[in-house]
Structures are given as C-alpha cells and as structure tokens.
Image (cartoon, rainbow, N blue to C red; front, side, top):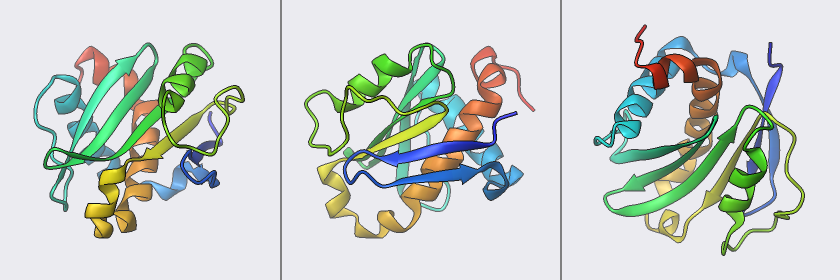
Length: 153
C-alpha cells in the first residue's frame, strides 16, 4: 500500500507529501469521471470550476493539462511506478521554465505540476489547483486499471 504521493511544483520547487486520507471518495469519483472523459478525448469539466481537463496516458503514467477555455493553467504528470517515470519527468521539463532539475527524477509515486503562464489570467484557480492535482494523482494511482480498462464503479 502506498503511504504517500510526493507532490512537486516544478515551477517553484515546492514539495509536499500527500496522504491518502486527504482525498474523499466523492472527490475521487469526480476525478475518475473527468479522467475517463479526458482520456476518451471528450470535454472533461472539472466540477465547481469553469475549467476542464485534457489527459493522455504515458505508459503507466499520466500527462494532464487543466485548461480554462483554451488557456492552459497547469500541466502535470503522475508516476506511480518507476517504469516510464524518467521519460515523463523529462517531458515535463522539456523547454519549460522550472527550478527543478530534469536529471534528478523524484522518487515514485509522484505528481509533478508545471504552472503555465495562463494561470496568471485565472488567479482564483491557485486556490484549488493543488488540491485537484493531488486528487487526480490519488485517483490515477488507485483506479488506473479500471479507468483505462473501462470498468466503472
């Protein structure tokens, strides 16, 4: 059983351990629905916001972007296992203005978030983005198989 997910903001270098108890079942259910839609290429609204989610699998990992309209606010990667983690870490760093080192990959499991310039146009989003990132990470880590196999709750 996973004890925590390392949540890293690549833009600032801030790190925090997210415990599973922080995420409610209801929040995970909402994130699961958004992930299913996003991975199917559909519009995936994020509940209680004017934003949406776009996501792609990266092997066992996930690359996701939170958008408000067409404006990207944050791009994040989630790696539950070492397989593919290094490539995903480097992809998040490629050409980006971040303070973390692309050569020093965080220990799995991790959720790494890269703030995009568009976040400045939606200042209220900063209040909920971190929580959403952690919820998305735990949902992907615990429910990846049923999300990607199409088996619902």
